[in-house]
Image (cartoon, rainbow, N blue to C red; front, side):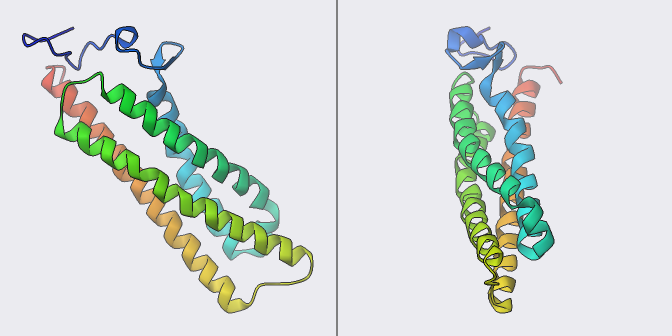
Length: 176
């Protein structure tokens, strides 16, 4: 549906007309974002546990490694799909804020991947009987905690701005 100026209104976006990638008729971004919202904090939490607790490291490091890689792959794909989807709406300050924040999320996930590789390296050294010095282990825990908190907070910020963009669009369309 279009308003009197010819712009699409937020309440009736024709996905096929807009050439937005879809999965079973739903915009790809709407589906993928749920994976990112779950995977970033989950990866961060498990990474901190693996860094801080050797028994957890032995049990979780391969899972954390897989989650970190999947999260790193999905994050930019989700952001790209979001920008494509955002192009179907008219200009909006809240939508611009959301897309800008979404573009930064990859830079918050990247440290999780790097630190996962470091924790994996520590795990492999420990299996060979070469433990990490206590000071370095403590530094690693602090770094993983900082990166995990930062990534999780950024996911919240991106998601909150996305919710505002949707809410503002819905309010403008008179649905709420």
